[in-house]
Length: 84
Image (cartoon, rainbow, N blue to C red; front, side):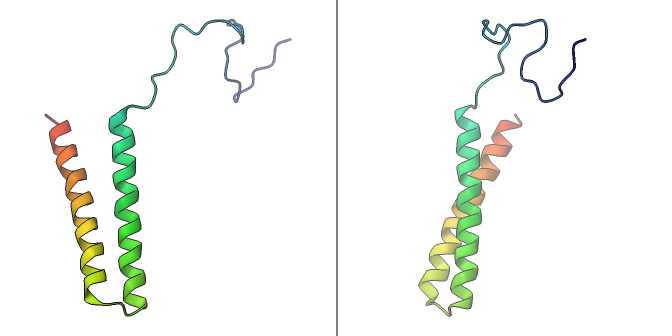
């Protein structure tokens, strides 16, 4: 009796070592850029918050804000252009 494993990566009728005809698509460059931009947004926002608690100079807040603004606006532009 064959057991069905929901975590199995191959189906019972395809061999584990055989060629995969219908492989899933890889990660695209656009997805990598979007992920990196989100990381930049989060890191710069956290850095701005940490600068607030550390009572840093104004230029630190401005630098973090500019980085956050650039990354967020780039994400917005890429999203709007992708909808066309």
